[in-house]
Length: 365
Image (cartoon, rainbow, N blue to C red; front, side):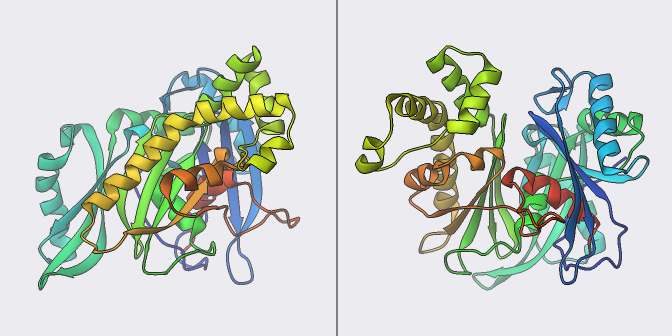
């Protein structure tokens, strides 16, 4: 059975053997391999295949044969048939719970976590594949505490993923947690704001958006929002009376969130009609991200503001002006983030590849 894994990169290839990362997205299945670079790992190859209709069902495996065939196609493009791969747990099924325990030896933590898990998990622990990460000790009001991150995934989801990858001739060696893979991929991205402030990572895909908050390399908060770029596409389809695929093309080619009266005056009626549709389709998502930030701040024991930096990544980050729209809601500067490594030909990486690059970096020590 695959396990969860968490590892920040130290940018060398000693230790674990390299793996390929494969991201099972709502719209695309993406694969990446990593090679050794001069100072940091570099992307060796990228493969992108459209996710077959019915292959996935809200992150779970739908039609096994369709998913396995798509995985074979990705593996063929990457040249990794039969090799080790890492994928991400479906965001909507991933359970993430921070725990604070008394200081104890590492060998005792697993036993205590198993007992405490039953008290804080939304489903019986026996139905989940569980793992934990020891984040380290902190001190609060003179008391030492051991911070531990508990991760859970329904066993049915884990077994389905394992079966699908096996049917494609691939060896699934780990199911990673999305927020941790994103942190791994974006660690080298220049960060605005003071280093002491917490970082919010927003990964906005087609069907889901995840919000993660990190402070000093520790995950404080994780939430999966069942909304993404698809809602904007559906709004465009309704506004222009076209099908979903045509609306997707319109959004990608001409979509833009416009700010300022001067900018609005410089656009034609069609562009403004498209902008209105995009805003309408995105507002629920933007508000939910804002509520996530408000919740984090309400739980913080800091005297000042907890979050000082926001990174926006994922496929929706390619929409022009989306960073300003998020910044307007959050009251913080928002930076579009993509993995710092480029392609072999020097081309910069797409923000939609952040997660899959982080998965591939699982094999880098």
